[in-house]
Length: 129
Image (cartoon, rainbow, N blue to C red; front, side, top):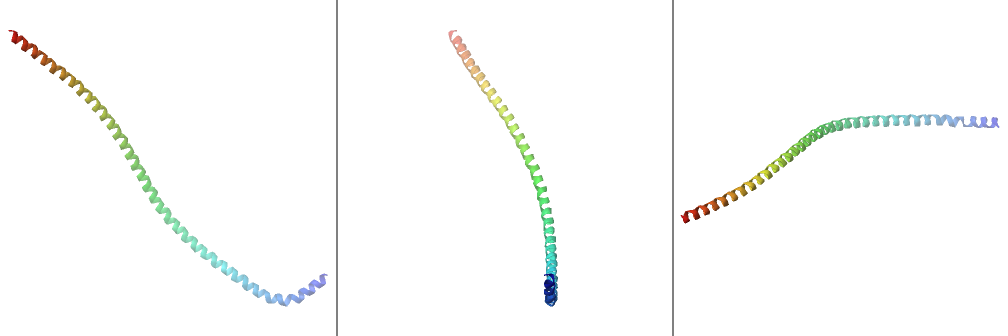
């Protein structure tokens, strides 16, 4: 069996010798295509890295602006709280003043009615004399 296989291999040897250069050309072209593809991918990756760097810089600026806006919003919130507190204090003062005005109004009414009563008494005393 082995001698037959070896004999057939010797018969195929001239055909194989013609196939070797073709295989060599195929593999070298494939290697060249892979190298070209790899170089193209490396160039594209470098472009993507550059774009990512620019995006990172832009995001850094946006992040800084966002922090500044957050600080401003916090300030506005604090001013709103202080304004609300001042408004409550003013409302309390206004309520106290309204209460005092109401009390003074009662005293004025009482005083005027007392003066009128005293005038009536004085007039009646003067008329009796």
